[in-house]
Length: 190
Image (cartoon, rainbow, N blue to C red):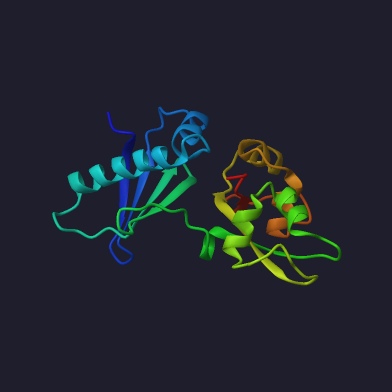
């Protein structure tokens, strides 16, 4: 049985969205395939399974630029085809924005969002750890769509981050959420 049970094809962007079989436990799936352990080889497994599905369901010769891997409504990874390599999408809509406050350091911000300092430097094209008050930093994140049973606390626990980091990244004043609302969730240490 394949790890993926369905797919959506985006002809305009040449992007295949694949959905992980719901019989897979979310935690097991995220740790095994998108987590920190043996990161490259597990991501290759995700990519190889997505490539196999694409070859089975798409017309022969179809070019695929990237694969979006989802488990239910959660985006687990974006795997780009680039000379057979994989990389996470750290720019564009997969980033939140944070304005640096007085006396904050890159390390402080990294710890606040539980994001690796090197990821922050990379996505913001920083050569050093030097940042300035008022500077807008991109923060690598997942996108989460709020469903009926969600609360800010449940979402924070699901992603193993603090409620405050979700509030900060989404400019939320309260814990009140709306069904269908998209939240930026900081990506944990890489």
